[in-house]
Image (cartoon, rainbow, N blue to C red; front, side, top):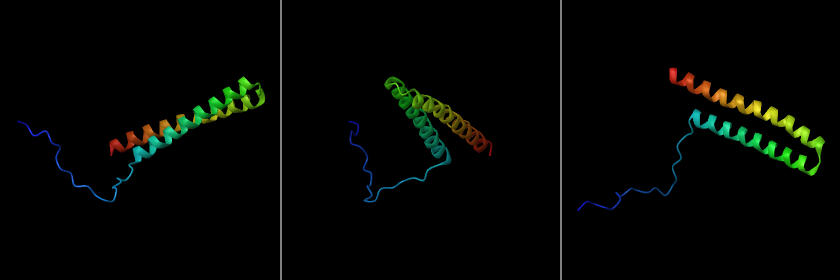
Length: 87
């Protein structure tokens, strides 16, 4: 019969964290900027439903800026990955 037990792995009392790579940092920035864009959009929609049109317009303008930052982060991440793969 085959051995059905998992192999023994020595456990360390101290957690081991691997250093972040640049692509992981880029993904974090991309996720943060996407979250910011969605947050501004949702808040703008809430303001619109409550009848606060001035704040809603301000949030929609902020959304456009946040979307631009998100696009720049995605483009920068792609460029960094492409540049790194060529080296």
